[in-house]
Length: 100
Image (cartoon, rainbow, N blue to C red; front, side, top):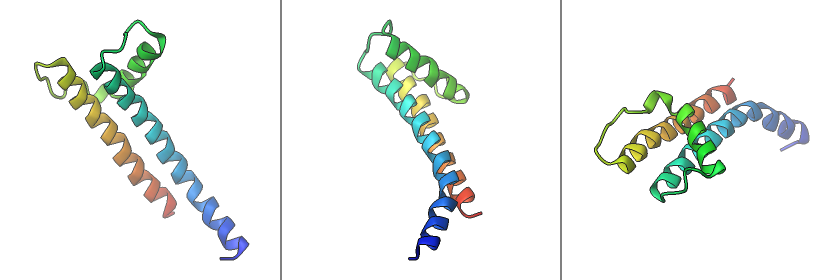
């Protein structure tokens, strides 16, 4: 592959990859919240509470989508679906942007 072709290849892919990276970061924030809840992390800790606030904001559409009796299962289902949503939508957008 020539240098010019390689440069165009990486340049063309960068915007879509950046969008997917943002989706992955959001999913990591949400998954960290699930882990904190399942491990009974101290909610008074700044990291845990900030992550919980951000995760709740990112998962707003999915909160109380399912309402099982178990709090841990509720968090795992609803926030887990939100994390999967961000990864799937981020992957779709990445593919669309990279194909332009």
